[in-house]
Image 1 (cartoon, rainbow, N blue to C red):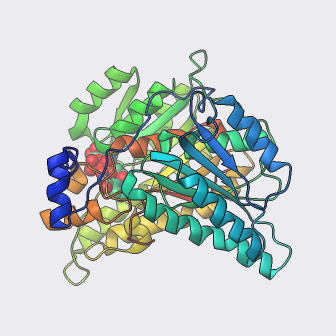
Image 2: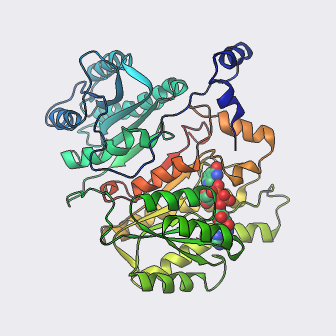
Image 3: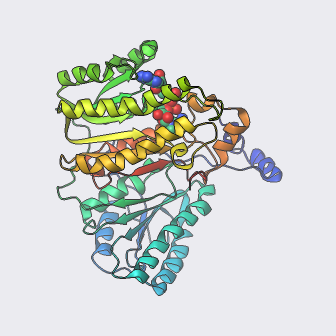
Length: 444
Ligand code: NAD
């Protein structure tokens, strides 16, 4: 779907007209959507600053930054990494303000800011100052969004500050892979095992399942995971057989046509996975909307959304758990929504299911931890797909613009975030919600 305003303001005349009319002037986002490499920061101008911070984090960051091209003294930078783990009193927050302000003048349009904070505080006043960093980042993200730049924060849990762990964090949050992720604060926990690189492994490809793969976010995800060398099982309804077959052929994957709301769906998927040796990456993407105000909603509209968006996921997971088909080290990703966080008029059924998934991943993460597996939710904001194409014009236009980047995301933006959560190095993230929403004002 074309965002006409985005195209219009790329021309100087269009920009002038938009400015005169007080319209948003979104910039084209810098995106990177090729396969993961072991050296994600190579060639990138990264600057790390450490206001108020103590060793060893600054030297760990310096070592990581040195792996890229590094930023020449005083030159412009593509990524700014702010170690704010030492911002534990008001004086250190002042240093955060001053040093970030100075460094920000060097950030290129479309740049990335990643702020590291800490969950470890000795008293309430330290906790307050550490928490201040979250508001700082969210406000900063809103300021730099109009230049296509983003800012996010990772709160390091005790023991999480190893070089491997920080490298894993930077490969997504400090690069153009996270183009439509902004204003997010996530917990980054300590993990014990070494975080192996995630380049394509064609010897023993990991198996991925993507439900709802015939179009939109699902198709983009299947393509993206295949790029990383995964063998993808594309699942969708029998009516979508043709696009599904074409996709499976294109990416060298396989397909399963099944109505996930049907009673035998979990069994059919389990049978297919048994033949492939289980599943390593499970993406619960299929979802539907049946929008109507609660007063007018039929029981059928309520039930069908519950069946696809929630019951099917619970049934599949229960079946795969019982059959031992979720492999050790698996990555499970559920497609939630901003509507599940903020609620949306006319979507009590949809918002309930998407909210359920947020509770589900938080609760299920502990159970999966013993198997070195993780589960997270992705909450897309306004993404340009068939689902959002159905919206009335004015609602669609509002959805597109009510975020810090003043534009909708693409299915590939969501796929890139899923691809990150699917990699071994994303292990420090589990039980959480990663919003891919351009810092949508909804539910912020
Ligand atoms: P889409 O409508 O383009 O694709 C959904 C796919 O799911 C379709 O191919 C459809 O055939 C399949 N599907 C539906 N019911 C099924 C069933 N019973 N069995 C098997 N397959 C079934 O949707 P999309 O926009 O790509 O969204 C994908 C996911 O992301 C959904 O869960 C949606 O709720 C979520 N999401 C999307 C947006 C957005 O802006 N597009 C925003 C927030 C969340």
